[in-house]
Length: 459
Image (cartoon, rainbow, N blue to C red; front, side, top):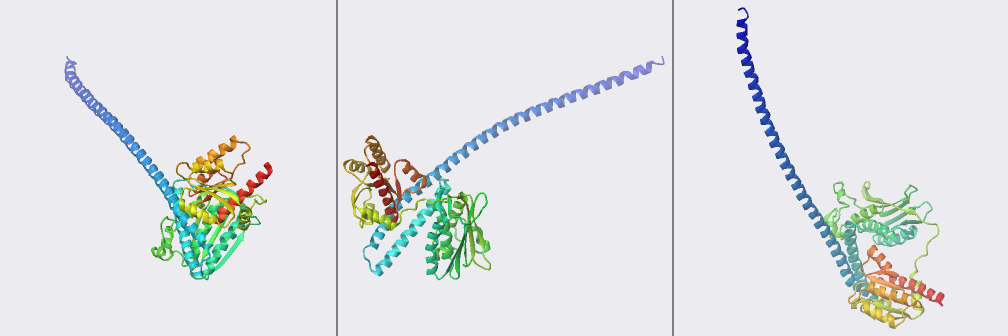
């Protein structure tokens, strides 16, 4: 009897514990089921969100791709438009500048020569603007080609500095040149772009300097790779510190009044810096103390061979070649004004000139006659110049006895890759429009001399 109360007491306790544990299990199961449902719903929401995000990413990526293609197409259209406009502007400009050159040889009075000088300088200024815009477009479109040509650096510097020394003297400015090349003269670089950079810096220095002088210091380092440094300094007003960051921005002038007083597009320094960077260097600015400015252009170059290359034919020698006999010249040019320009540029020489208006007529004239040289425009109706060149070269190959006739391309398309394409198509030389008499005569004399030598050897 002593143990019965205990057994009775344990029964209710066990039931309460059992009920409590059962309720706890049920609550735990309920909570687990609830959390499972919440996790499932959250997982489904995450899946839906992930799918939506993927759709948004795909949509955004497609939109960015479309925007990129549209931007590239717009850039290509802009480049093509500016190249076309450059060509179209150069064609009438060739007439203006060509006739100005022709007038110079017509016995003008002193007053008329002054008017002609204004016309010529205005034409050169317009051509410079066209070239600047075309250069900037080529750089932005990554179509600017940098050549690697061996040349005499001393001769290039001499040609540039002689021109700007006269400009400085006209303003009463001093002009100092220091050249330290370590005994070297010949380097490998892009002489055209290098000349353009130097000319821009010297032109700006003289333009903005009223008193004092301008200096050019050139140094060729012995570093690997070899570096050419060209520093142009002036005693002008300098550039305020707050406006120095605008120096190399395109279409930007430090002072808006500069454009009114001096002219210019604000493209020169921007293009010069981009060219220096394409040539492995840079263009930097250093303020003078207490005034003035120094612009330093650095480019990578390579050492040239000690043996100089054959220099271009000098103008007097070239003119002597053209005067030697009545060379038979075929001119293919569709523009009446350009034909008239060529007539006036070449009329002082004893040449027998035949003019036609398109490539088809050029091929027909070549088949019927015998010519020492062909001047071929590239863009012509009926048949273009390159197609005509291809037909002439093919006919020469078919007729092994046919002497190859030298062909010079005359065109406003002056990009490096375009000229290279002309040479690959069988053209022997290139003269850009607006045509300069000196360049045309030198190119003609060089090819006529080479062709004459080839005929002599064939005989």
